[in-house]
Figure 1 (cartoon, rainbow, N blue to C red):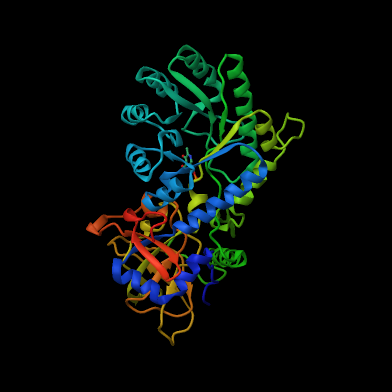
Figure 2: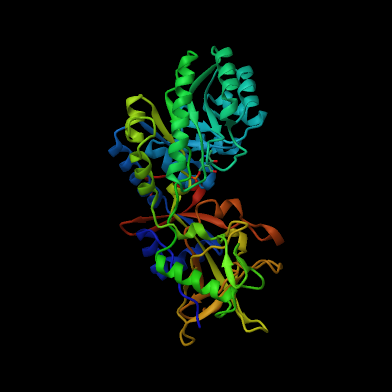
Length: 465
Ligand SMILES: Cc1ncc(COP(=O)(O)O)c(C=O)c1O
């Protein structure tokens, strides 16, 4: 039996590019393989969709693109040109934001910061989203600064290593009052890596109480920053996802063909004739796009506020909503292309399609991507097969897929294989340079009247095609 297909969701522009075999071949010819391709027009469309939801909600807002999601200059420049803000988390990201055209007023620094980043942020005059009391105290000693206080410890949320616990907020307010000549409190912030609207609503309610407490101390916060965490859509066919998951579980139980490599259980726990727990690939099941999740959050009734919608309460209190979307802005806006080096068979009968990239160039460390790579081949004759994609490192664990993937036809050396939706964290966070393999080149692709325009990411300028 060949495994069920789990097709990827592709943005229309990306789907058209992948369908245009000549365009893909030309990209590989010019820039080599493997290759990361980013699509700034898809980024711009994602941004427009989020803006549409926020505009309809009728509240003041600022979107700060979370630069950490991808080091692409093309995305940063697209964000700058669109007039939004940016969230940076390191000195090089701060430099990149300035080079992309962001004025200091539109930059905030988030995450845990050492003295070097704090000093750079202070000198640049950007807003500092402080992680802890040490940062607040140190900033006060560096000169005037505008700050957001990041809060954590909300009831019902997972413990976080980031932010100042709700129980410690009085110490932060004391510090802010003591240093009011130097520190200007812009507002409160949080970031929850969850798909749960209920959790975010609780965090917003807690932060509104903090706003009142800050006013009672003579401070004047005007911003509530809800961070990022809006989900991506990976799967183009939820029924394919479910069918694969079912077949995988059957294989783990020995009640169907084994689709897993070796002893891998993908986070499932097999005992007493059943499969328990949650798989590491669960996030690939999401089918709710980020704008829908944002609309749901804004419309959610806020407890303790007479059933008024969250967006209404913020607007009535003249609070500006800040967001720091990373993956929602680059959702389906990047792909990675590799080439087949050869196909081989193991003694146990598994088919291995060897690629010239490594697993961690397209996969987060502890996860398995439950969407299928797309094989672009002109070969014929074999029919559908279940294959494992193997990477080019001399490590047993360098299997790009540790699960069998359905292909409609076995590829041949030189064929392109496309990994969908790799722009969020995958391409940079885990790009491997082991065995002295070079880091894959990144290229921006735009569609113009005359066809696709390819430009090395670093040289991309929006509007210049
Ligand atoms: C403080 C902060 N804001 C925003 C983000 C972006 O999150 P996402 O990509 O889930 O939107 C992150 C990601 O780690 C973060 O740490």
